[in-house]
Image (tube, rainbow, N blue to C red; front, side, top):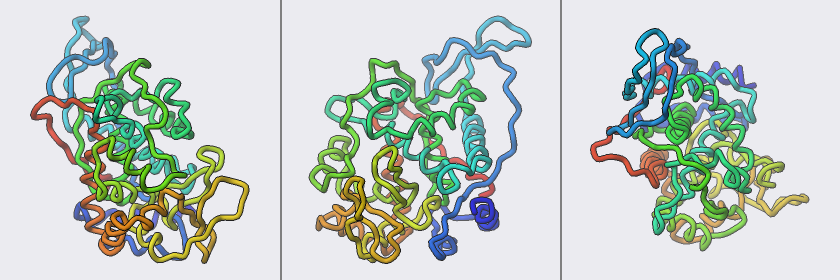
Length: 356
C-alpha cells in the first residue's frame, strides 16, 4: 500500500505549491486509505573530514572544529551555512522515502513527535527544558512514559548524525521535525540553527508533557507553563492529524485520522463531525468513532470540543485549512525554539521540500 500510494503522491509533489496551500489534500481522503508523502533526494558524498573537538563558540549557527585528513593538522573552524543544513534536510527526507516500513508507511509522525517532546519540556519560569540540549539521549528522560517509542526516531536519525557530525543532536532533532511536517504535505516551517547539546545533568523531571487522560484544566496548566495561549494549544493539537497511538507504548491504540501521514485539518473536522463513543476494550479510556470504529480520540482531544474557548478554534480550523496551516506553522516555530538562547540576528531559514 505504501509504495503504490507514495507513487501517486509523487505526481502531486512535482508541481510548485504555495506555503499554505491545501489544494491536493482531498485526493488523500478517499476510503480511509493511508498515504505517505515524500520524495527521494540526491545522495550526497561522504565527508572527507575527521571531526574533532565539538562545538565552538561562534555567532549564528555556531562553529565546529575539524581537521582535514588530507593535509593540515591545525584544527580549523567550520561554520555551516544554509546549504549545509539543506543537505541534512535532504538526507532526512531521502531516508523517509526509502524507509517506508514503519507504521502507516512513514517515520514522519514519530520524527515530529521526537521534536515536539524534546521541546515541550520547557518551563518559562525556570528557563529549563526545551529544544536546547537533546537530553532525551539520557535516562531518566528517555525512560519517561511520555517518551515511550521515541527510540525509533532517535535510531532513525543516527545515520544522519554520523554522516553530518557537525550538527548537534538538538538541531538535528528539530530539523527532522521540520522536514517531517513539510514532507508530509504540511506548511513550510522557518528554522534557526544554533542549539547546543547538554549532558545528563540537564534532564528535565517527568510530568512536563501532557497527559492524554486529562482534560482542559490540565492542558492549560501544561501549555501555559511553556508560554502558549488557548489558540496556540488548539493549533498545536492539529499535529494529531498525523501518526497513531500504540498499545505497547502509551497504552492507547489507533490513528486519529484516515490519512495519518498527510497533514490536513481533518483532525478538527472529525472532532466536530463524527459521533464518538467510549471504546469497549481492556485498555485505558479512549474514544472511537461510532461509524467505522477504526479511529480514536483521547480524553485530552475531546476536551477541545468540550471547552467553549477551545471549541471556537476547533471550529475555525475545521472550516479553513489555510488558517490552520498559517497558525500551525507559527506555533510550531515557537515550540521548536523554546529555551534556545539564539544570538542576536541569527538567520531564519526555510528549507525547500524535495521536488517541491
